[in-house]
Length: 288
Image 1 (cartoon, rainbow, N blue to C red):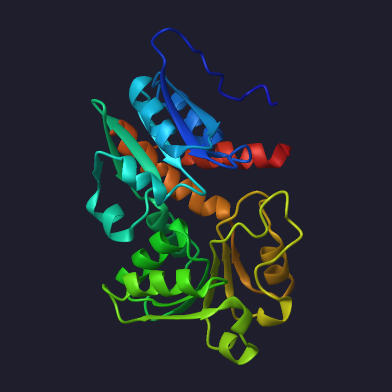
Image 2 (image 1 turned 30 degrees about the horizontal axis):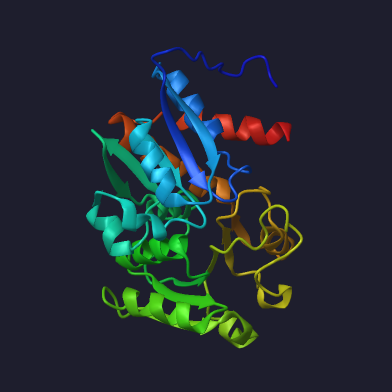
């Protein structure tokens, strides 16, 4: 560990934020959120909790007065049943990745979609009228699809379970007609020639299965932009393939930072120290 890393001084007044998920030991959220709290002299510590029952986790949030939490795989949809209030955007998306404890009322938000959109914008990738293939049909896929549809993108949802893909597409079509779907096994090379951006929202490629890609290598073309929201490892198998073919690539770290910035602002009501959060992640990764 570098000597210049911000140290956490915990005392009897220190409050708690956390992340709920399973798995969650790979999470980099504690790195950037603790750096943000320290840099702004906010007496809060952020920890990672790998939980099996998300209902119990929400109860613990109330009883322990945890002020805020991130929510990750596989609980982003299930957790909605146990909240006191859901932000209208998160309710429309049907997925929650952020919790705030308002005087023991647990409120759910979603910052995933904005995190993905900001990542694309920062890299100069056009969204309006782009044909975007989203791999997966879980909470992150929902958030990203809803957000990009609002920006007039054309979305195709691809998954392995026809029933789940169909259910998500039906929900998305309530807000936009620019939605299509297919099964991953049915993706062809001709189909991929019409795609501008590929976004992987599945856990395929995540540690410890970092040698796998959600798409066959032959389906990835040099004109594609490849965006993998998996950030452990930093360069997934899918991104490796894209890089080897000359594609523009976007790392999951980018989305992690942008959605984390929004979470910090929800919890604190203050502007997030973006540069501090980004630097903390970059330094941590450089040491792995």
